[in-house]
Image (cartoon, rainbow, N blue to C red; front, side, top):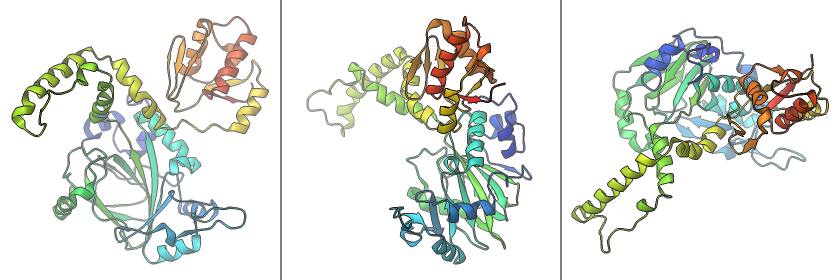
Length: 404
């Protein structure tokens, strides 16, 4: 968690305690209610929701509609995009208006890839927490409930933007559930938990925030006015993430691929006992030899691709490439997951190798803050610095700002 000891400015908007306290006491442990945490209208407003629904050509699955706990068939609010669009699943605003007027909740999904302010917010929060971030928005009409009591298999921040919403939070029926342990398979237990005394029973008002670790049962309904809140999903890795990677790596270990004795019945406890003992012994021996490098290499592509870095403007980047001079200032893309071990720069999907003489300059770029190309260390002249800068620009590792 990279920024807990630092400023962590974006995280501070979401919690009413110091980041270090949040990390130690609440992260993946307990819910946290933060009254008057921040004004969130800069991230998304009711006017912004109207723009998304009416002027942005929104398509599924960027929108879900729910009514009384049931997902509405997208065919009821999508259709053709008009002349020249050749799109059959574009959101139709007039149909949404009717559904919303009848009490349906509108769920705008994946806004961390769609709405500029939330793109920047997600990149910054990922930097604070060191975990992938997704953002959805929930617009609920007055006196309505979009979803029945349930739990999520990932942690969330709930940020109340407009209106008020009554939240009830109950203890988990599954401790730290993983993605395969969805609440639908435990509906009766969830209903029983929701009928018990809530741990948190509160009305979120604009500027309030609520942190819910995975597994905590919750439900919410709007008050006398419409409600808009953001749900920020935190897709943090777990120990089971490591276990899954170990299972994949185990396929490369010959001792763990050995067959069982002929005639062994896996359903017979007496027959499977000796084979299980041998397998556990081989597994222990393999684990003792396993390198963290091998586990990291297997996890790296999915883990690093799960969180997008700050957007890169292709037109501006191409223009900057053409106009590069020693006075051009470059900076590593915010949120770019990478690791430099001389002479290779590891990215999510590839490695880039640099001559040893470039190492100090690459390290300076990755360390930040922005740097003038002519000030890059370790290279003899501006020609070499420009060659390196062009390579970093072409590989989308850095972005260029105005010359100075």
